[in-house]
Image (cartoon, rainbow, N blue to C red; front, side, top):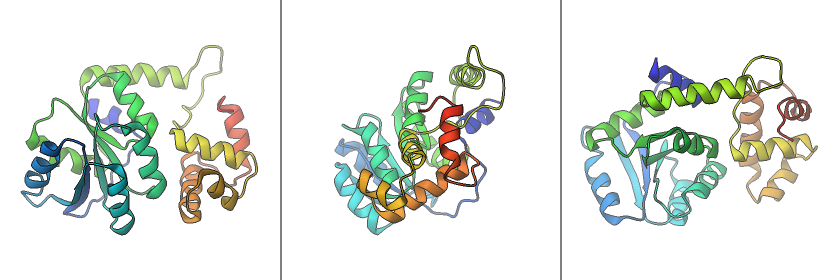
Length: 232
Protein backbone atom coordinates (compact mmCIF):
# COMPACT_ATOMS: atom_id res chain seq x y z
CA UNK A 1 0.00 0.00 0.00
CA UNK A 2 2.75 2.45 0.96
CA UNK A 3 4.80 1.71 -2.14
CA UNK A 4 1.77 1.91 -4.44
CA UNK A 5 0.73 5.30 -3.04
CA UNK A 6 4.21 6.73 -3.57
CA UNK A 7 4.39 5.34 -7.11
CA UNK A 8 1.04 6.92 -7.93
CA UNK A 9 2.08 10.28 -6.50
CA UNK A 10 5.21 10.34 -8.64
CA UNK A 11 2.97 9.48 -11.66
CA UNK A 12 5.01 6.35 -12.33
CA UNK A 13 4.12 3.24 -14.30
CA UNK A 14 5.83 -0.13 -14.23
CA UNK A 15 8.50 -0.02 -16.92
CA UNK A 16 10.85 -2.67 -18.25
CA UNK A 17 14.46 -1.66 -17.53
CA UNK A 18 17.50 -2.83 -19.46
CA UNK A 19 20.61 -3.58 -17.41
CA UNK A 20 23.07 -2.27 -16.57
CA UNK A 21 21.28 0.95 -15.71
CA UNK A 22 23.43 3.87 -16.86
CA UNK A 23 23.73 6.75 -14.40
CA UNK A 24 25.59 10.01 -13.82
CA UNK A 25 26.48 11.29 -10.36
CA UNK A 26 26.52 14.98 -9.46
CA UNK A 27 27.84 15.96 -6.01
CA UNK A 28 30.23 18.65 -4.87
CA UNK A 29 31.57 16.25 -2.21
CA UNK A 30 34.54 14.40 -3.66
CA UNK A 31 34.33 11.55 -1.15
CA UNK A 32 30.69 10.92 -2.11
CA UNK A 33 31.45 10.93 -5.84
CA UNK A 34 34.44 8.62 -5.58
CA UNK A 35 32.77 6.14 -3.21
CA UNK A 36 29.61 5.86 -5.28
CA UNK A 37 31.52 5.60 -8.55
CA UNK A 38 33.60 2.78 -7.11
CA UNK A 39 30.93 0.84 -5.27
CA UNK A 40 27.66 1.24 -7.19
CA UNK A 41 28.76 -0.65 -10.34
CA UNK A 42 29.54 -3.76 -8.30
CA UNK A 43 26.93 -6.40 -8.98
CA UNK A 44 26.27 -5.36 -12.57
CA UNK A 45 23.02 -3.48 -11.94
CA UNK A 46 24.48 -0.01 -12.49
CA UNK A 47 27.02 1.52 -14.84
CA UNK A 48 28.43 4.94 -13.90
CA UNK A 49 28.99 7.10 -17.00
CA UNK A 50 30.68 9.83 -15.00
CA UNK A 51 30.76 11.72 -11.71
CA UNK A 52 30.86 15.50 -11.51
CA UNK A 53 31.32 18.24 -8.95
CA UNK A 54 29.73 20.87 -11.20
CA UNK A 55 26.43 20.72 -13.04
CA UNK A 56 27.92 22.41 -16.10
CA UNK A 57 30.38 19.54 -16.58
CA UNK A 58 27.60 17.01 -16.12
CA UNK A 59 25.48 18.73 -18.78
CA UNK A 60 28.29 18.49 -21.33
CA UNK A 61 28.46 14.73 -20.90
CA UNK A 62 24.67 14.51 -20.75
CA UNK A 63 24.44 15.96 -24.25
CA UNK A 64 26.94 13.41 -25.57
CA UNK A 65 25.89 10.27 -23.69
CA UNK A 66 22.32 9.91 -22.51
CA UNK A 67 22.26 8.15 -19.13
CA UNK A 68 18.98 6.77 -17.87
CA UNK A 69 19.38 8.48 -14.49
CA UNK A 70 21.16 11.56 -13.21
CA UNK A 71 21.73 11.13 -9.47
CA UNK A 72 22.18 14.48 -7.74
CA UNK A 73 23.13 15.24 -4.16
CA UNK A 74 20.36 16.93 -2.18
CA UNK A 75 22.99 19.31 -0.76
CA UNK A 76 24.31 20.31 -4.21
CA UNK A 77 24.43 24.13 -4.45
CA UNK A 78 21.74 25.17 -6.90
CA UNK A 79 20.27 21.67 -6.84
CA UNK A 80 16.69 22.92 -7.23
CA UNK A 81 17.55 24.75 -10.44
CA UNK A 82 19.66 21.80 -11.61
CA UNK A 83 16.60 19.60 -12.09
CA UNK A 84 15.00 22.06 -14.49
CA UNK A 85 18.20 22.41 -16.50
CA UNK A 86 18.68 18.65 -16.76
CA UNK A 87 15.06 18.11 -17.79
CA UNK A 88 15.33 20.91 -20.37
CA UNK A 89 18.39 19.27 -21.93
CA UNK A 90 17.06 15.71 -21.77
CA UNK A 91 13.38 15.35 -20.79
CA UNK A 92 13.58 11.57 -21.02
CA UNK A 93 16.33 11.32 -18.38
CA UNK A 94 15.21 10.59 -14.81
CA UNK A 95 16.56 12.89 -12.11
CA UNK A 96 16.89 11.21 -8.71
CA UNK A 97 17.81 13.14 -5.57
CA UNK A 98 19.91 11.36 -2.94
CA UNK A 99 20.21 12.20 0.73
CA UNK A 100 16.68 13.55 1.11
CA UNK A 101 15.23 13.99 4.59
CA UNK A 102 12.09 11.87 4.34
CA UNK A 103 9.43 14.43 5.23
CA UNK A 104 6.33 15.24 3.23
CA UNK A 105 7.54 18.81 2.64
CA UNK A 106 10.90 17.69 1.25
CA UNK A 107 9.50 14.86 -0.86
CA UNK A 108 6.73 17.02 -2.35
CA UNK A 109 9.04 19.95 -3.06
CA UNK A 110 11.47 17.76 -5.03
CA UNK A 111 8.61 16.10 -6.89
CA UNK A 112 7.13 19.47 -7.87
CA UNK A 113 10.52 20.56 -9.19
CA UNK A 114 10.50 17.58 -11.55
CA UNK A 115 12.51 14.91 -9.72
CA UNK A 116 11.56 11.38 -10.75
CA UNK A 117 12.38 9.86 -7.37
CA UNK A 118 14.52 10.13 -4.28
CA UNK A 119 16.91 8.19 -2.05
CA UNK A 120 16.35 8.98 1.65
CA UNK A 121 19.30 10.07 3.75
CA UNK A 122 18.75 7.02 5.97
CA UNK A 123 19.32 4.58 3.07
CA UNK A 124 22.30 2.24 3.28
CA UNK A 125 24.76 2.00 0.41
CA UNK A 126 23.50 -1.51 -0.33
CA UNK A 127 20.00 -0.11 -0.79
CA UNK A 128 20.93 2.37 -3.51
CA UNK A 129 21.25 0.12 -6.55
CA UNK A 130 17.89 -1.63 -5.91
CA UNK A 131 16.25 1.73 -5.18
CA UNK A 132 17.49 3.23 -8.46
CA UNK A 133 16.36 0.14 -10.35
CA UNK A 134 12.90 0.47 -8.79
CA UNK A 135 12.68 4.15 -9.69
CA UNK A 136 13.72 3.44 -13.29
CA UNK A 137 10.99 0.78 -13.34
CA UNK A 138 8.34 3.21 -12.13
CA UNK A 139 8.31 2.36 -8.43
CA UNK A 140 9.16 4.57 -5.44
CA UNK A 141 9.16 3.27 -1.89
CA UNK A 142 8.64 5.71 0.99
CA UNK A 143 8.00 5.64 4.72
CA UNK A 144 4.55 5.26 6.25
CA UNK A 145 4.68 8.85 7.53
CA UNK A 146 5.39 10.20 4.06
CA UNK A 147 2.68 7.98 2.56
CA UNK A 148 0.15 9.34 5.07
CA UNK A 149 1.23 12.90 4.32
CA UNK A 150 0.96 12.34 0.58
CA UNK A 151 -2.55 10.96 1.07
CA UNK A 152 -3.55 14.16 2.86
CA UNK A 153 -1.88 16.26 0.16
CA UNK A 154 -3.61 14.39 -2.65
CA UNK A 155 -7.00 14.67 -0.97
CA UNK A 156 -6.60 18.46 -0.75
CA UNK A 157 -5.53 18.69 -4.40
CA UNK A 158 -8.38 16.47 -5.58
CA UNK A 159 -11.11 18.14 -3.50
CA UNK A 160 -10.20 21.75 -2.71
CA UNK A 161 -12.63 23.66 -0.50
CA UNK A 162 -15.60 25.11 -2.33
CA UNK A 163 -15.18 23.09 -5.52
CA UNK A 164 -17.11 20.15 -6.89
CA UNK A 165 -15.44 16.83 -6.30
CA UNK A 166 -13.95 15.30 -9.41
CA UNK A 167 -10.86 13.55 -10.77
CA UNK A 168 -7.55 14.72 -9.31
CA UNK A 169 -5.84 17.12 -11.72
CA UNK A 170 -2.40 16.26 -12.99
CA UNK A 171 0.47 17.65 -10.92
CA UNK A 172 2.62 19.84 -13.13
CA UNK A 173 6.28 20.52 -12.50
CA UNK A 174 7.48 24.11 -12.63
CA UNK A 175 8.79 23.61 -16.18
CA UNK A 176 5.59 21.86 -17.33
CA UNK A 177 3.47 24.70 -15.91
CA UNK A 178 5.68 27.20 -17.74
CA UNK A 179 5.35 25.30 -21.02
CA UNK A 180 1.58 24.97 -20.55
CA UNK A 181 1.17 28.71 -20.04
CA UNK A 182 3.21 29.51 -23.15
CA UNK A 183 1.25 26.98 -25.24
CA UNK A 184 -2.01 28.43 -23.90
CA UNK A 185 -0.80 31.89 -24.96
CA UNK A 186 -0.69 30.64 -28.54
CA UNK A 187 3.08 30.53 -28.94
CA UNK A 188 4.55 28.12 -31.48
CA UNK A 189 7.26 25.62 -30.60
CA UNK A 190 9.86 27.94 -32.17
CA UNK A 191 8.61 30.87 -30.10
CA UNK A 192 8.68 28.80 -26.91
CA UNK A 193 12.21 27.60 -27.68
CA UNK A 194 13.38 31.20 -28.10
CA UNK A 195 11.56 32.36 -24.97
CA UNK A 196 13.06 29.64 -22.78
CA UNK A 197 16.42 29.54 -24.58
CA UNK A 198 16.19 25.80 -25.24
CA UNK A 199 16.43 23.71 -28.39
CA UNK A 200 13.48 23.21 -30.73
CA UNK A 201 13.66 19.42 -30.38
CA UNK A 202 13.62 19.77 -26.58
CA UNK A 203 10.61 22.09 -26.82
CA UNK A 204 8.70 19.60 -29.01
CA UNK A 205 9.42 16.85 -26.49
CA UNK A 206 8.21 19.03 -23.61
CA UNK A 207 4.98 19.89 -25.42
CA UNK A 208 4.35 16.27 -26.43
CA UNK A 209 4.85 15.02 -22.86
CA UNK A 210 2.69 17.83 -21.47
CA UNK A 211 -0.27 17.11 -23.72
CA UNK A 212 0.02 13.39 -22.98
CA UNK A 213 0.16 14.03 -19.22
CA UNK A 214 -2.92 16.27 -19.34
CA UNK A 215 -4.70 13.86 -21.71
CA UNK A 216 -5.19 16.62 -24.27
CA UNK A 217 -5.44 16.04 -28.03
CA UNK A 218 -4.79 19.61 -29.21
CA UNK A 219 -2.61 22.51 -28.09
CA UNK A 220 -5.63 24.80 -28.01
CA UNK A 221 -7.10 22.81 -25.13
CA UNK A 222 -4.27 23.89 -22.81
CA UNK A 223 -5.87 27.26 -22.00
CA UNK A 224 -9.12 25.60 -20.91
CA UNK A 225 -7.19 23.12 -18.77
CA UNK A 226 -5.29 25.92 -17.02
CA UNK A 227 -8.50 27.84 -16.37
CA UNK A 228 -10.28 24.76 -15.02
CA UNK A 229 -7.44 24.01 -12.62
CA UNK A 230 -6.61 27.55 -11.46
CA UNK A 231 -3.16 27.43 -13.09
CA UNK A 232 -3.34 30.82 -14.83
